[in-house]
Image (cartoon, rainbow, N blue to C red; front, top):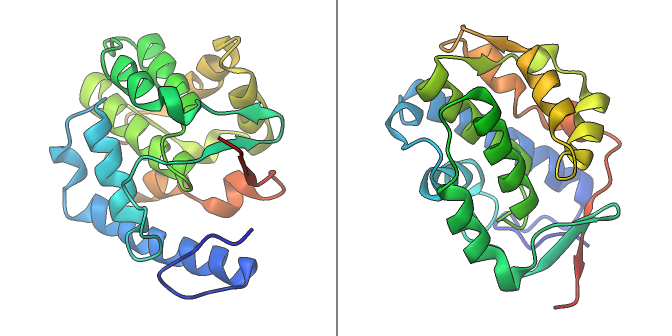
Length: 201
């Protein structure tokens, strides 16, 4: 199913390419204009602003909590019925240590609050928290794509592997735009990965 979009595109490959192009431009602007530094780390509002900025030119739902139940592969994300409560609980989670930050990141991934673009938005959101709390960032070029996808799927049950994987890729180069942009490289993280499917409410 091709998502309804502001561009009027009806071909999935074309939509993916244009979505990636426009969101990358927006992500660079978000980094360059210092807007990321003004976000309050760990809040849903900061995540909403990131998502809205990245996808506003593509989707009408940019920055809006999804109204559909969605799944990817065999994994079902938080049901719409409980989504807002889940987000409120995640916001209250501590974020003082590296482990606490990754636990919060994992829970926001399970919530998957938007219809599309969750991974890219949430990785930026994670970097905002890490930079503000620990003066660190994830160098995504050092994160093996296949291993990352596999451990993220398992992280709601056991988050030790995702913590180990991301901890090994931490850097103090928090002002490096190239490192930041690698975290939203759509082809790097999603090539060969199963697409979302909606489920009946």
